[in-house]
Every structure is written in structure tokens, then in C-alpha cells.
Amino acid sequence: MPDGAARGFPITPGWTGDIHEFDPSATPGFSGGKKEGQERLAECEDALSSLQERLFAAHHGTADGARVLLVVQGMDTSGKGGIMRHVVGGVDPQGVGITAFKAPTDEEKAHDFLWRIRPHVPAPGMIGVFDRSHYEDVLIHRVHGWADEAEIERRYAAINAFEQELADSGVLIVKVMLLLSYAEQGERLMERLERPDKHWKFNPGDIDERAQWSAYMDAYSKALSATSTEAAPWFVVPADRKWYARIAVQDLLQQALRTIDPQWPAADFDVAEQKERLRATIADAPAL
Image 1 (tube, rainbow, N blue to C red):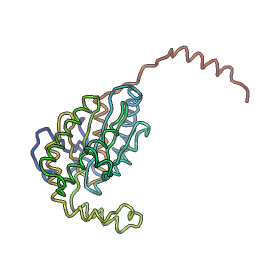
Image 2: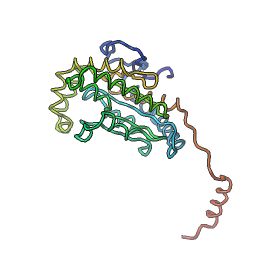
Image 3: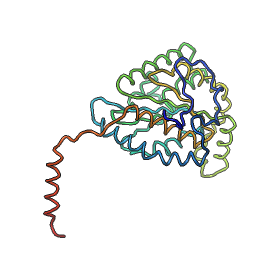
Image 4: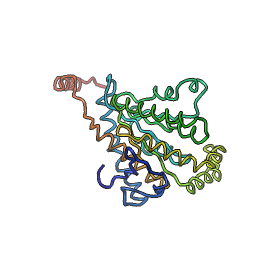
């Protein structure tokens, strides 16, 4: 990535560390403050939009071709919604598909955990975004003991195979874990309770899950270690500063699209001939 990119913390394949080694309030790769970060977000919106439009133009409607899958994971209030609005929301909606995975339905539970994920894999030319994802089925299950260690390991292996399959078919995968501190989450939850316009976002169950904080951090550490691969790397993005998390995800998306380097498709018609035809209609325009 270029100098000055807000790259977060990349998790290299084989990493065996602990999530606590990363500072949720850090701004790796970016030396400015909030004002500069907000300016950077606005300044780079056009560049991201242009890259996305080129991707859509070059590959949309083809049988196979390049596409991007952005996976966004994080604890409640980590800023996933803000990423959707301020980063993903800055590109042409016709070229983006956002899927928010909630608790599985009875029908979904009757199938393998990846069954409900596969239909939402982005088509050629598209940017697909998972607001939560297939990782919920290892994180929550580990924390609450809904699956034993053998089943969790089986799911890690299934995820790695699934993501390798996607990469082999032309999907460039970027996985982001928004790292929020316990204290910052408490403040954001309190804000939801203190503001009537935020009550709709509050779920009493969030406090219950907050009691499992240490277990979730351990689950994230294990998931990052088991599933950060060359084909589908993880990036831990500090999220205590919302503005930083947004520019980091924006930079990661831009880098993914630059890696693909989509080009405008050549015209499948004679441009000069069509110009002459159009000029004739302009010259012969009927009077109003």
C-alpha cells in the first residue's frame, strides 16, 4: 500500500498472537488527526468510486471475472454501520451488494453453515460486502459453547477451503476485524440509551454479550490465527476512532481495486460511425 495509507494491522498467515497486542485507539499508517482523517475520507471518495465504476464496466455481466468481497466483523457498536454509510455508500449502488447476516433461520440451521453464505458471493464486476458473515458461526459458537472444539476446527477448515475457492474464481477477499475497546463500547452503548433517536439501535442483549468480552477476544484471536491466509488475509482495524476505521477500510478497498486494475472496456461498435449518426440527428433536430 502507498505511504500514508491507513492500513490497520495486517495479520500474516501463520500468526499466533493475541488480539490484545493491538491498540484499539491506534492509527497505524496515518499520522494525521480527526480533521485530516475526515478530509482524507472525502478526498478519496472519487478515486474509490472511479475504480468501482471501472470494475463494474469491465466485468459486469460476464461469465467470470474479477470482483471484491469485503468482510466486516466486529463487536456491537464497533462501527460497521458507519463503514456501510461513509465508505461503501460513496460508490455507485448498482455495483455493490451488502448482506447483513443475522441469526440463522430454522431453514438455514437445517443446512451446513456456509449454505446461506454462498448465494451472496459477489458476481463478476461487483463489490460484495458482508456486514457480519460466516465467521459468526465460529465466534458465537465458541463463546457460548454451542459447538465443541472439533466442530470449530472443522469450520475453520471449511472456511479456508471456501475462501480459497472464491479466490480461485476471481474474488479478491479483504477481511476486516474492527477492534473496539471495552471502555469505548460502554460509552457507545450508553449514548444509545441516553438519546431517544438511538433507542432503536439498542438491544438489551448487547449487555449480555458484553459480559462475554474476554471470551470474544479469545475467539477473535483464534479465528484470526486459523483463517488469515494468502488468499484471504485479515486486517485488524482499530475502531475507537471512527474516522480512522473509515479511512482504513476505504484505503483497503482502494488497494484491492488497484490490485485488480480494471480497465474501461473497448467499444463493441464503430465509434466514428456512431458519431456521424448522432451528428445527423442533431443537425436535423425538429423545431419545438
